[in-house]
Image 1 (cartoon, rainbow, N blue to C red):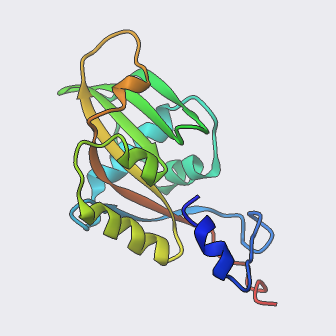
Image 2 (cartoon, helix red, strand yellow; image 1 turned 60 degrees about the horizontal axis):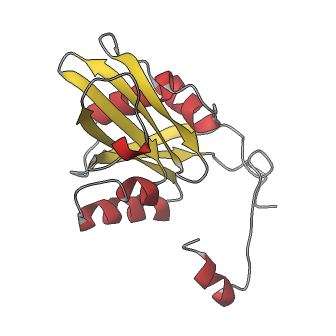
Length: 176
């Protein structure tokens, strides 16, 4: 939706279905915490979310799960707020050694709308990764009370943890 106002100033628009111009090999290419550093904790959080979410499986989750296998023992699934195309995010709730933790992953604008902070730094990280040609998702967390059911209302006052970025490289003959 953010791009629609720019359509009028375009002279050429190129679109691609994954695998036509690209190698159809989406990989987890970069990750940045909100402090702009590569953050291994962020990788563990996104892995836990992708591993435990039971809804729609997609190539981005596969890229996360294939990137590395961190130790997630002690992070047992407690609940889930499934992905839907309206919210554009998925949250899993896990029991941790420190209590229950909600881990939310999704479209950055949608995750931002659930965060308690309003930091311009997050937009600059997201914008930079997008300019570099990556598909970007945001990760946020929140400590929650352990209970039997969680709802969308639990996706509020989250703390943004960072961003993960994916790349599907172009085929060698894509320029032709």
